[in-house]
Amino acid sequence: MKWSDITEIAIALCEAHPELNPVTVRFTDLHNWVVDLPQFDDDHTRGGEKVLEAIQMAWMDEAR
Image 1 (tube, helix red, strand yellow):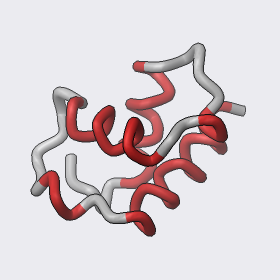
Image 2: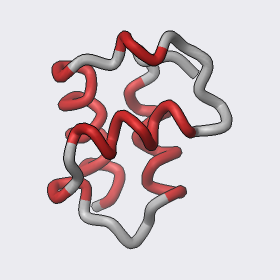
Image 3: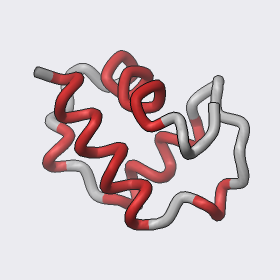
Image 4: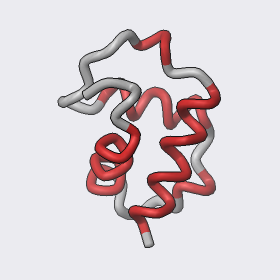
């Protein structure tokens, strides 16, 4: 899984943290959770604010 796999990441986060409301998640925590996903295999430094925001929005869609 790469940073560009926004929907895949959102689904994995939804499954890993079903108790959380994605709106309340800080980007520092979000970044850490993404790179800690077992399927994640990308450069950890490439997860900038725009990518994290896209992941958070996709996660909110998945959590509905």
